[in-house]
Image 1 (cartoon, rainbow, N blue to C red):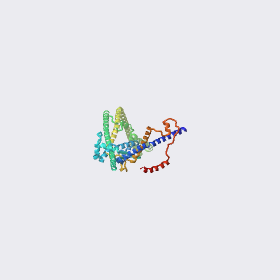
Image 2 (tube, rainbow, N blue to C red; image 1 turned 60 degrees about the vertical axis):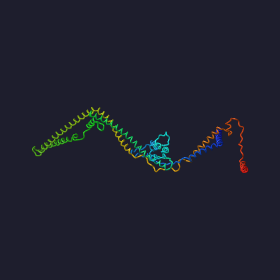
Image 3 (cartoon, rainbow, N blue to C red; image 1 turned 90 degrees about the vertical axis):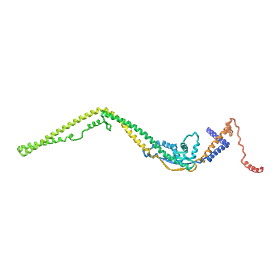
Image 4 (cartoon, rainbow, N blue to C red; image 1 turned 45 degrees about the vertical axis):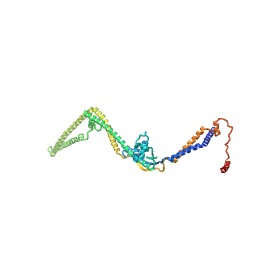
Length: 459
């Protein structure tokens, strides 16, 4: 507890000593502070008055591109915004704004340009553009996608004129930048498409030569024609008369009826005479049925023979086609390898041509991705010199500099002002201390009237 108390006493004693030093050296602090204030006042009084004007532009980054439909990703927003802020101060944007304001023909500006240092070899447009860019300030409005362009000029009207010109030049420059980039990309894509087209033509010529040499032709699906034909031959035949053979049912039916008539004729012969008209009629009917049944049997046998011959021919054709496919397998495989190279080339050519068409459309676009917001606004009041800021700043700096000067003066002209200072300066025993001898305030008040009375007498 004693150590803490001792540290607190030392700290208190330290600040008391510093306070006494500053109080003793207050003239130095006052002189430095008032000198700094005088300098700030001189700046405020003599500096040229300058005014601010602002123009705003909204970036359409939260809706898809009207041509491509592409939306900027969240990770790309911050770099995009930073690039746009830098693009506004770029000479290719500021130079058209300077030309629009009419400064390239201003005699005063031309004289100032002519009196520039000889080491400055910049052309007039670049010199003016960089001078204007130095007075430009671009920033994002908090919590929005709006860019604020602020320009500081010698008059409110001039500041508003330049800020509006820079905004218009920024929008026009964005359109030009899009067009130029699209033109460069379109040229590169067109050259790439021509290279792909040449490679594709070489592959197709190689494929055609191989087809002519081998006789193997690939279908659009990638299979060769002979394999497709083999698959067709391997399919089961469609249902038809030759497969179901409904004609064979007719002979069987006629033979059944013929058997029935024979049975009836046998029974009638036993009951009736051989020359009975019923017997003669039944015999005539049987003869007709027998003739029809024989004819149907001959026809059915012919159809069966035809079907058998067709099946044999089909089997022979299938076997021959299979042998042909097997013998051409290596040639078909080489053709498929070439076709596998042709397919991605053809797709790449299609994609490249679509990209070229899109980029050529973009070279004539009038979309900038920007929206001008309202009229140019003039900021009320004088932007520079800011008297409160300058006087406050110079006064604070002067006060700090005066304190430092007072402490340095005390350091180089050290005096013992306290008992602790004596103990620190010289390690000798101290017997005691006397209070400061000061005249009481009452006596001083009494002496003042006497002096005032004595002044006229002495005069």
